[in-house]
Image (tube, rainbow, N blue to C red):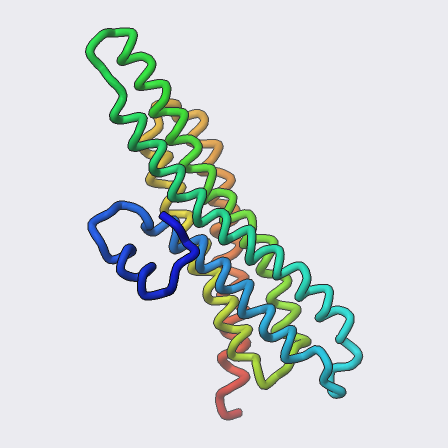
Length: 210
C-alpha cells in the first residue's frame, strides 16, 4: 500500500475489505497529523512581533516537529509491512513437524515485530507531547485550538497504538516477551492519557466565559 496518494484514494483503500491499511496505520498517521498541526502553529507564530521573544524557540520546535512528521509517516508504512509479514508467516507450509516448527517461529517473530511498530509510535508520541505543550503555552494564541487538536491527535495516536500493541501481544506464545512489551506500553499510555487530558482541559476552559 502506497501512502503517497491523494486522500480520497487512501480513504477508499481504508474502507475496503483489505486488512491494510488498518487501525495501526491510522494511529501512526494521527501522530503525523499532530506533528503537522504543531508545525503550522509554529509557522503562525514565527515572524510575529508579538511573539518575537519566543521566535527562536518556535523555529527549533518547528524543525523537530518536521522530523517527527516524517517518522510517523514512515511508521504508518512499517505498520502495513509488519502486518503483511504476519500474514505471510501464517501462509507457510505446515505439513511436517519441521515445517510447523519453522512456521510457528516465523509467526512469533513477525508478531513481535508487529507489536514493536505501534510501541515505537507510542514512544514518539511520548516525545512529541511536551513539544506540543510548549507550542500551546507560548505559540500564537489565535491558533490555540489548533494546538489543542494536535494534542488530541497525539492522545488518539497513543490510544490506537496501545490497542495494537495489546492485540499482538495477546497472540504471542512467549508471554515473558509479551509482558515486557505490555509493561512499557502501559507506562506510556497512562502518562499520555493523564497529561493530554490535563492539557486539553486547560485549553478548553480558556475558551469558556469566566
